[in-house]
Structure formats: structure tokens, C-alpha cells
Length: 114
Image (cartoon, rainbow, N blue to C red; front, top):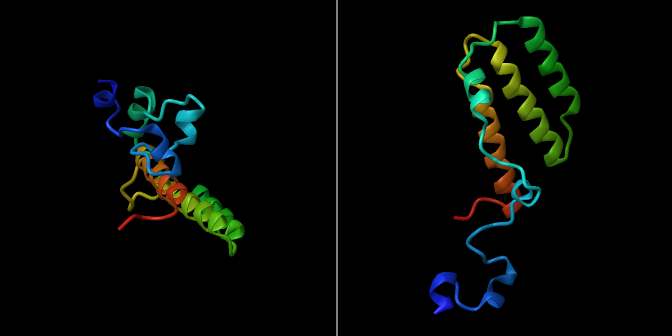
């Protein structure tokens, strides 16, 4: 009768990483992955166009970009953050956060399952 509640039968078979719920470092750390309402409200506010800030962030992004996938990811994140200061771009801090979180989960899983 307890097997009906498990959904996966014998718990030992799922130890090979085949669990329906992948281990999430944020969940393991007890961090709520939901964007707080205050942050979501701030995401609706427009960032003032600022060429100096945008250029500075993109310069840092170019400096940290290297051959490793981690440095390329950090560089891409910095470029996305710099888009907040460009009136031509349509993005928000919440969008950037959710996108980065999705990318990190895919990376943790070893890639996109096809």
C-alpha cells in the first residue's frame, strides 16, 4: 500500500540518477527558488539607459571570457545584465535570473535530454 504513494516502487532502483526529481543545490541548501514578490515588482521598473554602465559590464564580460564553459557562461550572464541598461533590449532581472537558473539546471544534468 505504501508503494502506491511512492510512484517509483523500490527506492533502490532510483539511486543511479534516474529519479524524477533531480537534485537541486538550491533546494538542498534550503533556498526558495521562487523570485520574491519585491524582486518581481522591481523587475517591472525600467532601468535607465546608461551607456557607461553597459560598456563597463561588457568590458568585464570580455575580460572574463576564456576557454572554459564556466567563463563563457559568466561572460554571457554579464552581457545579459548589461542589456538592462539598453533601451533597445527587452529584458528584466527576473527574466535573467530564471534563464540563468534554467541553464545551470541543464548543465547540472549533463545537457539537454533529447
